[in-house]
Length: 320
Image (cartoon, rainbow, N blue to C red; front, side):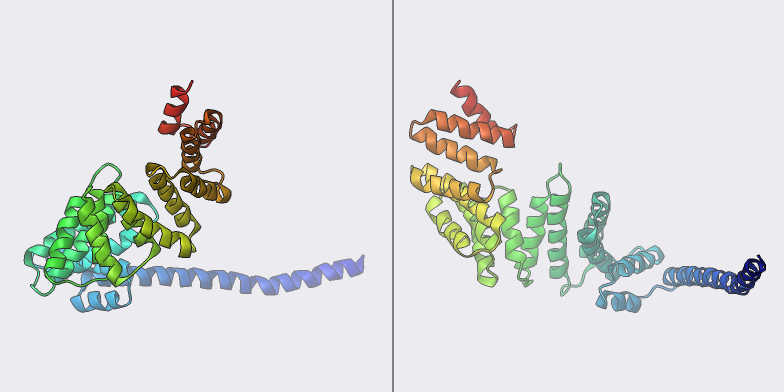
């Protein structure tokens, strides 16, 4: 019993010795947190109290787009008119923040601000900087078009990208953006021309597929096939290969090459049995051969995968 009491006293002493250190540590952490909070607010106040173009450019060089966005905003608060540098940097920063945003509402707000700031920047921009502003404004409209589901800005993207290009601005991706914008507007011939120009700068399997798709829409299946064959033979992207096989299968169906189409659809199903379009295409192959039992079986598989597949529904109803 005495040993137990002694042990408790020993533990109690140790706790008593440890307690001041614990309390001191908590106070130290609290003080550190308060200091960091104060410092953060001080820096924020300093940015808004003494923003400068030099500070703006320094942050831009380190890719600190949030700081660029804040500093340019502070500069514009002080001088909302004739502050073209701040407008330009704010537009650029907003564009990159929109791309990085994970919340759709944030992306929308940033891309709207990018368009607003850059459009204002074009009114007083120097001749040497104007082409780049046009380029960034064109890209901003392109991404605005993809972010907003019910609004279409491909025409505005095209307008400013063409202004940039015709002003002599050089960028590896400008022709690709032009091709995509033309495609969104249904301007197939222009889209193919822009994509073909982009291929001279940088070839990619995605770009090859985009060209093939436009040739298909332009009813130039033979030209489309050449690009699809290249993707299927060399690409490591299974998803893109399956998309290419599906498009190739549809082209071969149109050419009455049913054996070739069957081969492509079977290859897709071997990789992914849940491809509604591949099962639908295979049903068309069986239909062409007069095997309606197999055709209906494939269309039923299509509807199990995708209940609202309009073409499969039409076929099932037609052959009831």
